[in-house]
Length: 136
Image (cartoon, rainbow, N blue to C red; front, side):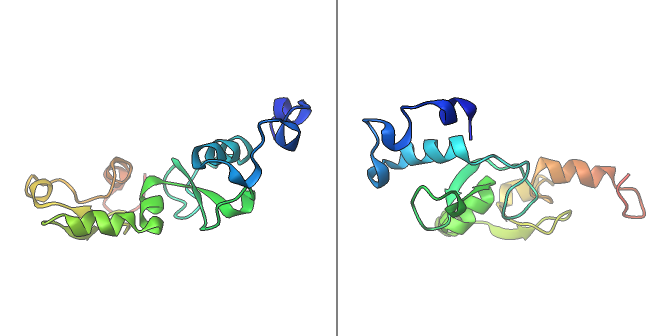
């Protein structure tokens, strides 16, 4: 916990503005953000840096009910990724040539010869491979 927060006397339940469980979604996210350390990698896929602070279905102040996720894991776990792709008329799920992660591909990108990998990170790593398939 932040030393400034820990040593202050007017924080938490001692604060006159404390709302407890009636806090807004934005306020709760800010409260959790200050207390839950951000890891180097997504806590779900362990591949990409996390961007989103997401709950595990229980919206409260318990830190164990929250985790840091990359955007694609957050959207997939929320069901937003499937809804997004379902609404698009063209495209398909594609497996990344480097990491086997699935991502949405659209024909215009595929025709240009791009889109064989899910991210720029995988593109760079794939370029570093030598002919034996080992990373240099």
